[in-house]
Length: 164
Image (spheres, rainbow, N blue to C red):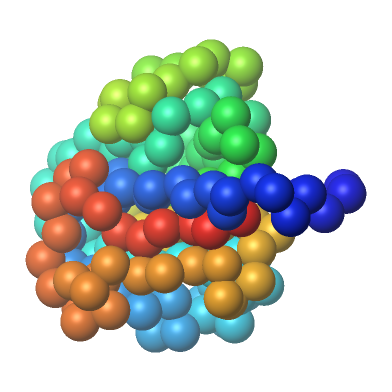
């Protein structure tokens, strides 16, 4: 990908919380693939122990859709992965109801998956939700103060900004 011309202003993409809960630094996620930023950079959310709707953190096109995870790519080509719980791929869709499909255009805040947090926990899985941006460097991500402090987030509240 060619470097942007010097005359272009840097763009910023705002990433919203896909659900409510306590913000968790990515390094504290009990999964080394996420904690070490191998998948991408961002933060995580420890969700309430109830059935919740996971929403689109950005406006864009659904690139990938699984019962337990989704990737949305913005018009500026910023890809955001929302992974509902750890090792939840092993649940074969139990505890998740999808509302959109690959190729759909979604708006930020639009419901994507209904997440049954209690059933995921009952199956022995950690319900924490990593929210990461792929193919970015640490200096491209600016966490919201509330996220950096481990505060309580509302659904669709600012999590971080991605500069490109």
